[in-house]
Length: 210
Image: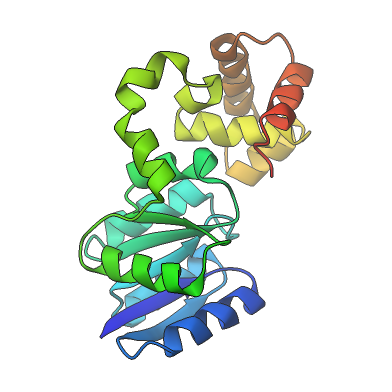
């Protein structure tokens, strides 16, 4: 029996996932969480084999949640479920310890297949993402500027690109305003841009908030 924890801040999504899992005799839901804090309390209290982790859960940034989960519970597998396209988060999720990445537009059958593959110690990504990963070494020179950023730089880029002020970004990401200002300057230099307005246009053009 594969014991699952469902971590998603939307009750309807959690209910749908629970129903899908309950229809498979080899899977069971050990608990649910709507925030990062709830997830870590759950993992400390019950035995879990695999976490279905949403990208947009409140309480901490996605990458921080994922890394903390892997540090505290190294034997627990993580399958990321996301409404964001693979080209935005899949690679970063895998690099930070996730074993698989599945967008929410896939079928229940594909979800169950992904759960079983990850639970067995294998990785799960779509065929198109697998091809992209395989060819990434030879494509590195043509990758988009945002794909070359660190995880934290990417988070700051998305936050600034959404129109937030430096103080708001600092508060949301748990950073100082000085640190965010430093990141902003670094982003402008790395990406060859001149102003925050350029960052906003870049984020909008590349659909990084979709």
